[in-house]
Length: 388
Picture 1 (cartoon, rainbow, N blue to C red):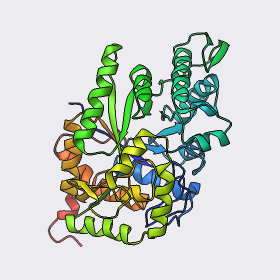
Picture 2: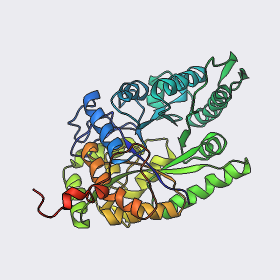
Picture 3: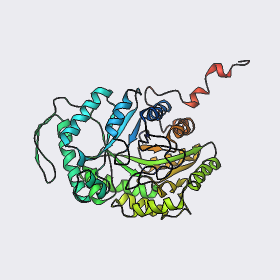
Picture 4: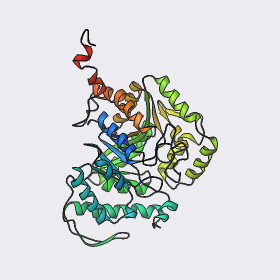
């Protein structure tokens, strides 16, 4: 198996020591946003992720957060090597402009762009952006959109009169170098077809390993029918501490801080979601605060107040490393991790879990990453007899 690639998350909807809501109709601040998503704060998170050894950082998209393209372009100057996994929606931009923006981004950032193509949120939010297609039509449009983008990146002049996308004489004067990989997720049948045809990395949310394995097998079969192979990624939160008891105490503290009225309101909103993935997330907890450990070290508490990724790996550093290895065994190549607050949790992961993964031969820090906590403990002068 190939080594793992690990990414962090930039909380462009705000951050805090409690669970912060957002996404799929859930408004920012529904559960404790106290740190504004300023460039100053996000730069701290990005630099921490870069220092401990993450390869990239996902930045979300939607009305509930800051724009990912603009925010990450500003953060490039505050970092040195961290890549930015920019989420965006095809319905809000032309394929030619998106392809051009990606090429410009690669030149000015030194090749630090990754792209997370999000077909669309809820129809209510999509209509606010002027997009009136239904869910299946949005996926069909995404397929046409990516067909144009990939052709442009190959240096072709593109004419397409599709059902949803029409361009004439589209071309790029300068191509992206390197071509940014396409990350893509979706649990519906329509999503699977697009992923198999166009994605480089298929992302899924943190369901139990057996369910993730089934989804990987589904997408892998669809891709093989098209003569393609994909990498697979898992989007999940994490609470890791020196001991299992400390990690679960933190999870319980997050849960105890939630207002039952907020949970009820958020769940009512998420129940109306058109997303199959969101339906699967809700089914893991059923809106209840009981029995939230749905698999060993997999906690569904985040999804009580947050749309999208709603589960967390909870446990000691060794236990979290074990679970990451378990997902790797079923086919996960990349992880997009996060935790509240994102600044502190990046360091918990970097100092606690990443050295274990490295020791097991599952992960290596990217070139230019900071010295790991494991390496720092072997600095000679720190262990010299009589050192002062």
